[in-house]
Amino acid sequence: MTAALHLVGSVPLQSTEAVFREVSHRIGPMLRRIPDGETGERAAWTAWQGKVVERSDGVVRSGVRDVQGIPYPTYALKPGIAPDDVDFGNLGYADVATSSYADFRRLRADGVIRSDRFQVSLPTPLAVVQAFFWGSPQLPAICKVYEGTVLAEVDRILATVPHDDLAFQWDIAVEFHRVWEKPDSDLARQYPAAALIETIANLSDYIPSDVELGWHFCYGDAGHKHFVEPRDTALMVDIANQLTAATARNVSWLHFPVPRDRSDVAYFRPLVSLKRDKIRELYVGLIHLTDGVEGALRRLKAAKEVIADFGLATECGFGRRPPETILALLELHREVAQTAIP
Image 1: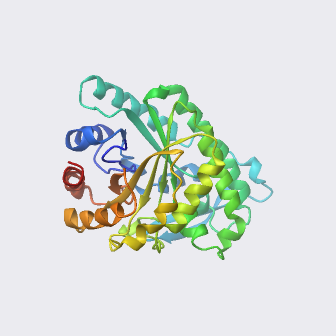
Image 2: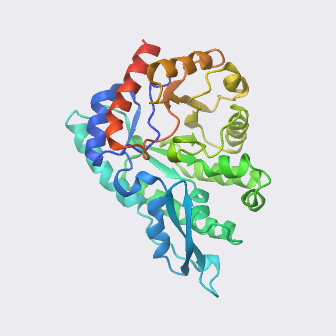
Image 3: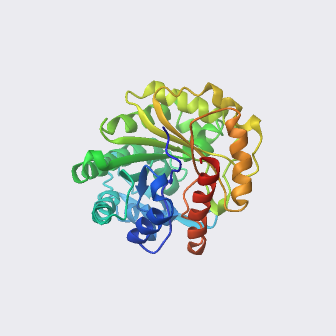
């Protein structure tokens, strides 16, 4: 059975330990796995990778661009440098996962954490590379180099965290709102849909079968607004079906968003075509702080007209939210889950 609740990743409290304690106290028994909250500089998702790109061998800063209020520096390869010559070095993901897992293990031993697994959420390589090498004609080749560096980080995490304590989630966002929803865009011309499916399938199959694997489908959450509003769940169902067909292993969970103004059955109806034989758990991102329990229950009622056996979540992580709203949002999770799943 699917757990009652799922956290996508970011929870902007003051520390990893604060996240573990507050989440465990308020909704811990309803979670199968718990993230470290991506606190501090990681709260803006990929923005913290800017400093990694900045110090990378073979790269030079070329400008800056605004991503819904967040300044992202942009970069290019130095003259005479080929993409394969770029060395991104230590990305930092394994370092923070190792530190956070130490807190997870200690707090679990103390009886604070009751969730089964420690969750590590990672962006797909395209999310990072397109953000910092915006418009580069060499984007696919640079992305392949960064992908290899990400998998080296995965290897370090796998060597540090016992596999039966570990869950990986691939955050699949840019692919939706910049490529699959915009097939005529410059980025879509660089990245045919089939190539992206193959990349995500390879990333997924890289995770050993004794480690949990999840997919977070996302349309962005900068300023609490999607970059593109999904018309319904049809594209997400199509991508999920393509991914499960292309992936050798089973998927522990799939999470997808529900816009706050979509409590109509039509939004959910394409889910009847979702092939769930390789997807163990399904989480519906229908909790929104702006309309509370009442709004969540409206969307929940519509979803239940189409699908069964699913858990609940927000549409994205909490990282762009003011920290003072986070405890109320966690309490909302608990109240919705207790109301909807007696």
